[in-house]
Length: 349
Ligand code: 5GP
Ligand code: MN
Image (cartoon, rainbow, N blue to C red; front, side, top):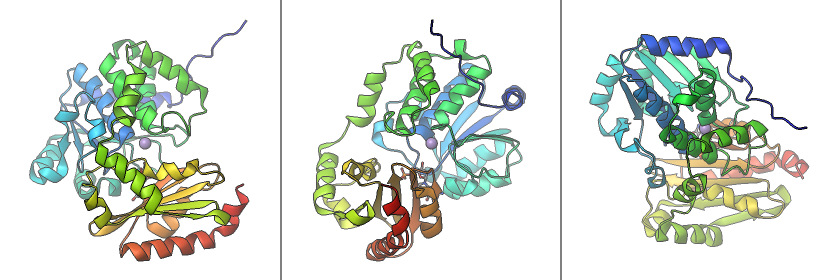
């Protein structure tokens, strides 16, 4: 006879109660998420947004800058306020909010120019996140780095608050999208059996998980598909003895393929398909800075690498950072850094 364990209470019960109380006492709620919002950032934020709207709360959702086209199918994405487009209006919204949620980021710096508005605000502040080192400006900290997505934490929060019955298909779709995005479609960071218990509970809400996968991953423009081919054939260097691969794109390369925001999302993962490659980097010229993305499989800590050399951070297997200088300098610094880590990189296989 087999039976399934029920979903465990990952989030401390006192936090669930505190958040419920704060929501009840609030008049104007603001949900925020990190710069260059990804699937998890938006899935978690929109999931919570729809839930609060359903509860007849006044709620707004604000992100620092725009987000990729393949996330725009999510209901409510056209209601998201983009700080960069109207910083003055954004300030007024911060001033009028008495409860602010920070979703999928640990410290104010990750929301760019919105950071000072958050820090100066008198509103109560709740963090829901899965990055290491939560900031110290929060009234309630729901921070569980072992959980693979913030969207999963939003599900758990609602579930533990006994709101599963209230969850509708729209909320479930957003949460599923976020869980899928931060695990690469459940291909990494996804061995916790409870993830699949949650997916089962989401499917019971009527979501079509296969359709959601297609909307996010099988939605490439022709330009983007050709840019991927170009990147892998013309802009990739492999360091076999270090089990590392690097891809890069200049501004000129991006222009040639009519680059749009989000067009290179996921590119960094591809070189991990090469046998014995366990660490990949993607270096992309991005206006005044060079954006770095890192991925690994196994134990190589990309977040420590990003923090040590590129003023960044993130998770063990997925992180990013920034470099101020030329693309060429970023590449040669990267090459020096992997040499410095040669022992660790060689030791991983
Ligand atoms: P991506 O490579 O998709 O841009 O970022 C992967 C993950 O790395 C993000 O989810 C985030 O946790 C982290 N990350 C990316 N860029 C930065 C950065 O500049 N600073 C920090 N602290 N984390 C970053
Ligand atoms: Mn996330």
